[in-house]
Amino acid sequence: MKLLCVVGARPNFMKAASIVDAVERRRATNAIEIRLVHTGQHYDERMSRAFFDDLELPKPDVDLGVGSGSHAEQTGEIMKRFEPVLQQERPDVVLVVGDVNSTAACALVTAKASYAGGTGGGRPLLAHVEAGLRSFDRAMPEEINRVVTDALSDLLFVTEERARANLLREGIREDSICLVGNTMVDTLLRHLEQARGSSILRTLGLDGWGGDGAGPAPARELHSRSAGRAGYAVVTLHRPSNVDDRDTFRRVLDALRVVARDLPVVFPMHPRTMARVRAFGFENDFWRPQDTAQARAGRVMAVDPLGYLEFLCLLSHARLVLTDSGGIQEETTVLGVPCVTIRENTERPVTITEGTNLLVGTRTESIVAGALRQLREPPTGRIPTRWDGKAGERIVDLLTERVGRRG
Ligand code: UD1
Image 1 (tube, rainbow, N blue to C red):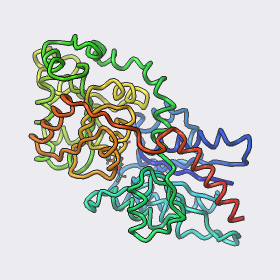
Image 2 (image 1 turned 180 degrees about the vertical axis):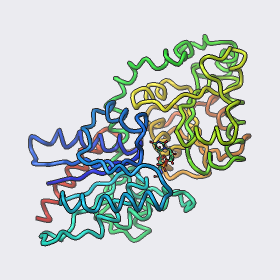
Image 3 (image 1 turned 120 degrees about the horizontal axis):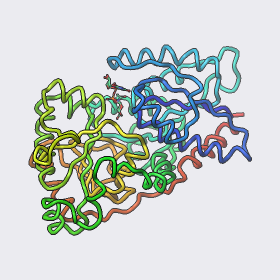
Image 4 (image 1 turned 90 degrees about the vertical axis):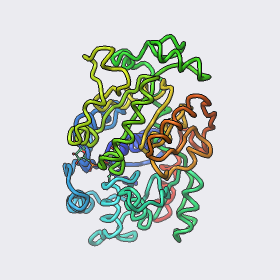
């Protein structure tokens, strides 16, 4: 079996790493060839290369180098550059992961491909990892990518039961859907111990904040009010709906500043968000390591995007996480860390019904109320079905079987 795995943006890398690992582990018994194609949607050292290093991913076999652009420019450019690669590589399977523009673009090309003079159906099988998730919000670019990719895929690997129900409702054949678990969780479990050895807490000056509530005075107050340890809060925000709209971004920052009165708030910042902070003149909401203690009070600590291991370390020791990311809702559920999701909806409902996630919207008061609730009564979630570190292996086994049947 020849497998071509597509990655493009930061959240894709952890998912692909699980598949690459599983192929490695099956290599002794199965003849599987894997080719990694990077579209170049994310290209900054900190958004891409750092993840390949941390995850020990092999260098991509092909780099399409598309870079940034409008949705149409980026999607179109990926399609144009991916088509000849597909014709040259002629894989049995194209595997796309997640819901970014690279996912939908390569799915479209694969579904319409036709191998000149080919046998066995004339085109590769298209498999989608993390299929069926729906926010039911078509204003989200990712929702469009999810719907398009799922409609075209031959094999749909889902992370939760609700995703299967969504796909069946959309008319997808039941025998093409499989609940395999979560590849992002595979990678988290594999790297957690190593990540905990990271020196990032010390580097950021947060190491005095964990465990015993012995941090500076405001954190001690919070500690006495809450059941758990003092610690710090981690924030990530990058959704266009939150950071591209000045009023929404302002309301969210107001809430973060309230939380920051009680607890150090650290914000590893996506390049998109960093650009908006500058454009909107919000720099004053953040402090930098060189600032005095007085200047820091009630402000947020902005840092550059972190590598995978550093971020996982930060997340795993956090008292609270506030985010608009999809993957982080899942990672906090597995880590048992309280999460506040700053969005009106989530495509990952199992993180609420079984995990540690709370959906609070984007109003200042509801974010603050949600944060306090999560701090005072930390949720005791459980790990969703099959989030056990074996999703990648299940996927590779199912693909091998399906390709074998195709002949
Ligand atoms: C993309 C995904 C989103 C995912 C996120 C993770 C889509 C539609 N969105 O959003 O689902 O959650 O990645 O990070 O695919 N930029 C850089 N350096 C980079 C990459 C981007 O500076 O390496 C800046 C550029 O100004 C670019 C902007 O960030 O225009 C947005 O990048 P883009 O890839 O369009 O979307 P993301 O917001 O990263």
